[in-house]
Each structure stands twice: as structure tokens, then as C-alpha cells.
Length: 124
Image (cartoon, rainbow, N blue to C red; front, side, top):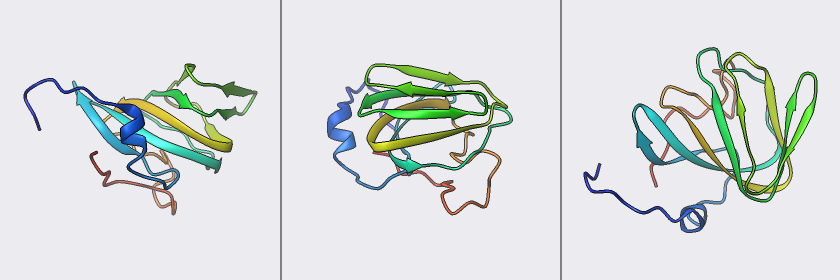
């Protein structure tokens, strides 16, 4: 990894992939990772026992389904899902999302054998 600070252009990074629900790592700091993903359709209900998750909408919008409500997130808006809270992102149209979370976070949380589980993420 580079020792010199590097600028990251989000639009350029998002243009490098087209698949959905497959996060890419674009930065790391203090044991945390900055990840980008494209959302489309519904994800699975899950929770993270030990990690909080930060979701920032860069482009498009998505709904964060919680057991007691649905929160609509639009460009420039973010939400932190606390550890242990069951949630399910749903995007009715393509959404580009930046996530900030501990490096140990697996995208499907407690669903370790889901077909959508990604454990070896690509660095962009």
C-alpha cells in the first residue's frame, strides 16, 4: 500500500465495476475500510454482531428496511446501522453507495454461507 496520501475519485472507482452487492475496497485507515458497492434489488435480512455499518448514498437512492420502519436514503444522505440491528437494504433502481466499517465486517453479517457473502474483496 502507498505511504503517500492519494486522492480518490468516486465516479472513476464506481465506473470500474458493474455487479451488484459486491463491495470493493477503496481505502483503509485505522483498522477500518472504505468500500464502494452498487445496490440493485433487495438484499437479505442480516445483522452484524460486532460491527456498526455506515452507508452513504453517492448516486441513486435505496431503502434501508429495519424491522420497525423503512428509511429512504438519497444522494448525500447517510445512515449508521448499529451492531446487532437487523436490516435489509433494498434498491428499486441502481444505487452507488459508500460504506465505512471495520475491516472484519462481512457483507452478509450473520449469514456466512449466503450466496452473496463476499470474504475476499477486491481493492480498486
